[in-house]
Amino acid sequence: MAIASREETGNMNEPVMKETLSSKALTAEELKLAQLIVSALNLETQAAEIDPSAPLYGEGMGLDSIVILEVALAVSKAYGVKLRSDDDLNRKIFNSLRSLNEHIQQHRAK
Image 1 (cartoon, rainbow, N blue to C red):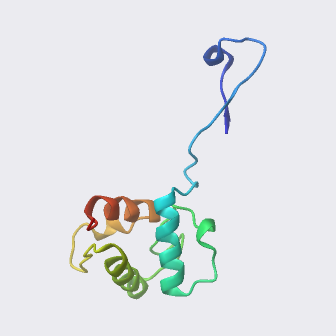
Image 2 (image 1 turned 90 degrees about the vertical axis):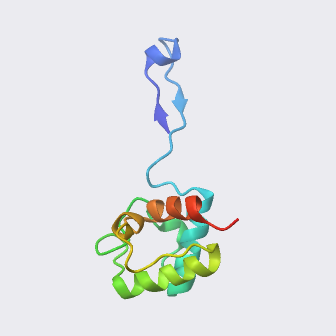
C-alpha cells in the first residue's frame, strides 16, 4: 500500500491508501512456478517467501548451473516449454523467478 498525495485525492484533509504491486509480491502464476521449483528441488523455503525479482542464479536464491538444469527440466514437464542449455537468452530468462515466469507465459503449450 502507498499513500496517495493530497493532490491526487482531491481532498486536502485526508490521505488515501492506494494499492501498488510490490516488486516482492508474487502473482498467481509466479506462486505456482515457485511451488514447482520448491518441490522439484526439495527446498526448505516456502514458495510464498521467494522474492520474484531476486536473482535465481548466484546471489538471491543461490542456484548453480546444475540446479538451473533441474529447474529447466521441471518447467519443461509442467508447462511444455523447452529451455535449451545453449540458448543465448538463458541469462535473461533465468534472471529471476519473474523473468522465468514471463518467458513461460509467452511460450507455454496451451
